[in-house]
Image 1: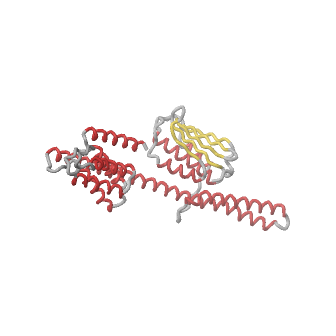
Image 2: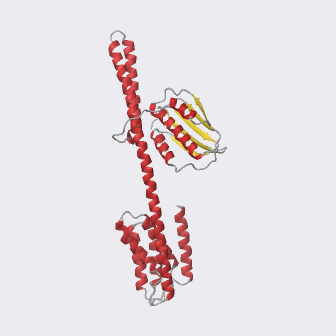
Length: 357
């Protein structure tokens, strides 16, 4: 990741500064101090770039121990301080519960005490107070980013739950549609089987086909279900025209036969158009025209909604999250972004039933 490359570069630069000021120089009496100082850089760096509770605790303990027990008047190290700051930020951001508070406090203590050397002077105390401010700022920023991330996850989960509920309602109607047709055909076949075996055989074949369609619909969407969801009517291709009429800037072009599309596919096409028109009304007030194009082939149905407004990011993206989950559940693809000629384009493709999910 890019941030890791930047972190490594910053640590290397700080280590060169420390080397220039003699941090790694070891007098003959204490030859281990240079390696210990180097270890106080490496351990926090690893804990920063490869976050882990044990590594963070070990890095903080090593740096604090070297600060307290070092028999030399060692220079203040920039690299180890920077590395400990990263450890504090990552540990705070990745904290799972209040049980991580002692570890966060331990890392903060190790960071703040880095400049202190006995006997304490004004310079050491000033640097320690400065690092206390830095540690407080890192804690506040990491906690704020964590709250934002949690809120985003909850919003995405709410959108996905709503989408699953709609999938459940749709599946109820899809299966009901196919099963009803099978019952009607079975009743008709039982009445004509003796006097017209050919028609009875055709009815039985149609029952088999309807059963296969029902199984396909269930196989596509059963993983997205939620129990105890109220039933609502399913919208299809014919329900797109009222959406176009409600948007005076919009025009509709339909190419190919849309009458034989599976119900779950037709419903998803309707949802893509509806969500796109809703976003246009919310975020593209300056648009003068909206083109809605639907085209079917034996294997695919494509939907393209474009407008000539400003090609800017529209909304917070949760509507697109729901559409993406819905389309991908059917084995399709969807993309939204600036058009080649400007404006904003939503482009989706869904398999009509021959493509497997």
